Image (tube, rainbow, N blue to C red):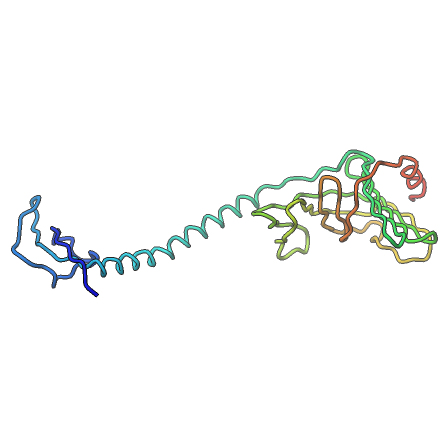
Length: 228
């Protein structure tokens, strides 16, 4: 393969490391150019391209290092931002009606109070009043979130882009239980840390989507009367 040859004036003091130039390519007599010793040289462009690629490859690790540092800084700064979750308006009700007749409801009360209601059949129903508070997760990119709660070692999770996860602290304060079924809630006074997924008109609790519905004040008052 033929080479393309160029003739150029090169400062001999800076000759070392120039792409495509070797001491064997020096030719002609020494000249004076801008007060410095120069030679006429041959430049091999094929070697120049190779040298350019080597320079690019050597720069890649540095570029990767800079990108990693930027990502670490972004993650650290985002992790310092904590946004508290606020309850929906008082008496806001979210419910799921199963095909098998099961009913699950979440009713928000004033401040941090809420009621969970579960009915499995005519013979078994349960309700608990809880103190429910929480913090939104930290969103890093697309559906990648980080959640913090007691006992969590690796808090990164991927969720659909239309939801916001909330790490909650839920303490059971009062309880009503009818029937011989197994309770789906914890004992009175015990605290758990479930994750709620929040949409505009729905809340996911325990892998169950509860859709927003109109509050039934008579139903809410009836549950209040049953809670101990």
